[in-house]
Image 1 (tube, rainbow, N blue to C red):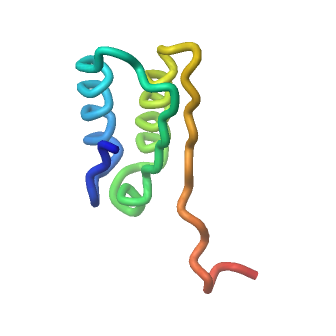
Image 2 (cartoon, rainbow, N blue to C red):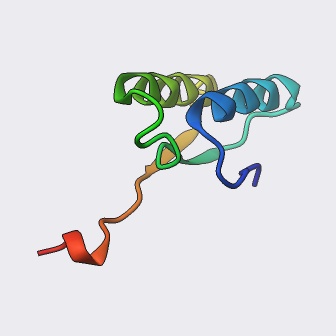
Length: 79
């Protein structure tokens, strides 16, 4: 549990790089939820690349499972 409220993917990526580098052992499971704070501020391509970079870092342990989450649609957007 290393999450930071309101963090954008660029800061997340730097924190994940630092965290993975400092760990004695790589966790078996990573849960990644990010990108919603980037909306309307960061180009989508940059957010996507940051997320992919974090997934790559997390999978350096071949046995690690990476769970990528997304924010559900707002009820007004559901049909």
